[in-house]
Image (cartoon, rainbow over all chains, first blue to last red; front, side):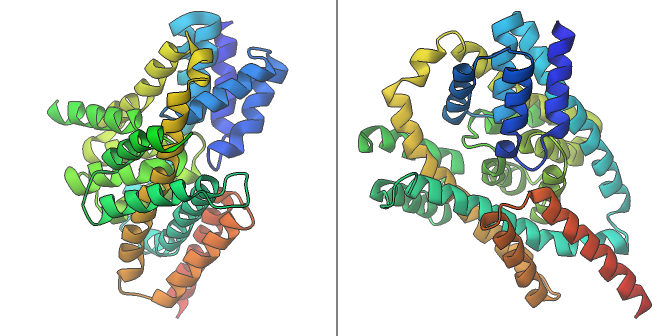
Length: 178
Length: 183
């Protein structure tokens, strides 16, 4: 049974490509529909909790499912399962990158890739801004705009660490939001 | 040995405070590994983000592995990865005991509502930093701006999977390398 858990998360890890949210349907399919390790409402709960706790969603789900059925050992098995394939793939990419990064070919490739990465980070940022400021409603949430501006000023101008800025806004949020 | 411990503790600290998942780790990695420890430079970080996004799995795990490898080889990579994996493991193990009351906790909900725009703001600062270093280098700046805007539009407006966007850039890079040789 522990192996089933390991291989289930190995599959999830292997096919989660392109960011956390893209892998939701796959995680749900394997965890809820196929293996029935979580009910639908438990799955929704773990997504909610993932947004309230640090760390990648898939790893949070792995620990949650593992602990529920097999205790700490299960959580470890699921976590190891999830990272197995990604670490193999990243190792191969790492090897290629450090072996060939002085070559003309790789330099050319990354000259094109780097600005794209900039665009992709900006896109992720824009999505988060839209979600935080507008959410599901049509009117902008002024509190979110305020905290957004505050975090930018504190990190950019006042050189506060990103973690300190986020924690500060979380504390302000406790008093600001209802 | 000190480097391994340093790597482990650094990613442990980053992972324990990475709210929001995915790209949210970028500003924290930049602050710790680029600005504070100087384990990697900004250009390498951008390259690592591209590799981490092109690989399956979680951005945080992949990025830590790469940064750890750059600093201290395979063992460094494993220490950094272990540091990243541990906080969600411990935190969820504990919360799973009382997850229903945690989920419905009003204080936690409000704190997260406050943290969400801050995560976006902190990433926005990284966008400016990375923009300055990517678009500031000598070379074809116009082409870089067009590439960045195209990637932004494809991802934000059309929800194209990140992997396809990076793959397209790799193909363009290969073509430009061959074209460059012939010219």
